[in-house]
Amino acid sequence: MTLSTLIENKNKKYLWLFIVLPTLGTLFFVPSMVQAANCGGAIQCQCGDTLTESQTMWYDLNNCPNNGLNIGANNITLNCDNHLIDANNSYPPSIGVYLNNRQGASVMNCHVQEFNDAGIEIFYGFNNLLSYNTTTNNDVGIYLSSTSDNNINNNNSSSNLTDGINFDNGNNNSISNSIANNNYTGFYLAPGSNNTIQNSTSDYNSYYGIFVEGNSNSLTGNNSNHNGVNGIYLHGGSGSTVMGNTANYNNNGAPFYSGHGIFLYTSANNNILNNTANYNSQSGLTAFPKEI
Image 1 (cartoon, rainbow, N blue to C red):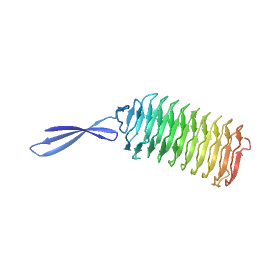
Image 2: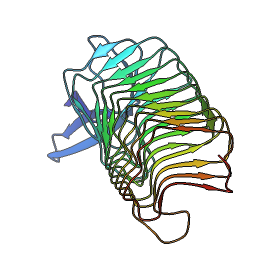
Image 3: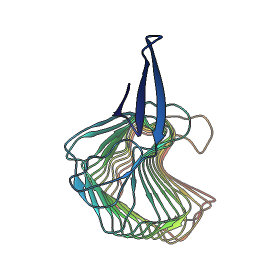
Image 4: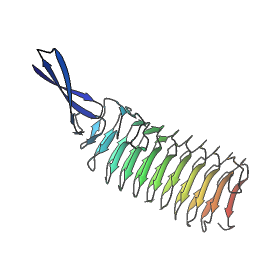
């Protein structure tokens, strides 16, 4: 007698064949793997599935062994509705929500945790929106690589292993009203031009609160306090604006470039205006060489 049943297990679906040999009274289990599928709309996703139409989640994804979800179409929305996308944090490297070469997509209200690559990653994408997400205990909270014109707002990317939010080779991207506390570095933008960080907080990070490399970037109205090395660090480039920020109590005073509220390294012709930088172990504002 043979009985087939479909068992869904995380991001893989298994077809188990129960084979009973009457004469031996033996039960055999033969797994047949079915690859991760497309999902969206009213179709519930499993770990590793590809979202091809908009969905508001009504469920959690737990202990994903690989990626959580892949965004597989342009101009669609993943609204997690404050549900969880969670990894088992094991090899191979995995991403909670992955947008590869996407445009016009939105990811919002997601709690993404314990992925050993990134909580949310946009790779070669533009005009995407990440809003009201919480990414924690990942390698990187939010990671953008070779992207432009993306809007990152009202996210909390704290307590990640390396960076809270990282823009790698990105231009014309914006971060606003976001939090990146208790990471290695809060906001890390390098290299990139014409990016904006505004009204955001990066406190109690082990290294930098905000690290920026490139030209014509804008940092306005941010709080970057109690970080291990510097509150705000501009590395190279020119034509950036640093205005109305607070960078206090940054306190690792080891080498000369540590423990400053705002530090500019080989960075010239910038606009540094109306910032508050007090109680740092070295200085409030320092440039090396001495040109701003």
